[in-house]
Length: 123
Image 1: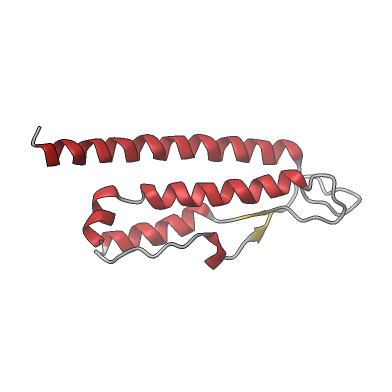
Image 2: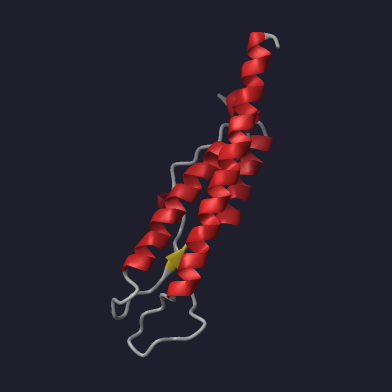
């Protein structure tokens, strides 16, 4: 399994992490008008660096989603009077960026798989 992880790199893990992050941000957006709701997020770079380090050491990367990582609270740029820290424009931008990054990882993963397919076929 470690060879498969090494061949595909961090991209499968990145995609799963992006899916998990999209759910977190969607939850923030769904609660934009909920008094006292605190916007949450994960430290994507830190988690992915850990996975990348594990793969580069030749070990099997064990990534089971964000549930093993601590969700952090987002600090609002302009606090609201009802205690809600969700800022619609910020969350929409983060959701959009996360979606584009997912598509980028999908493209890289498709390229890796295509390359492996050519090697197996002997092209």
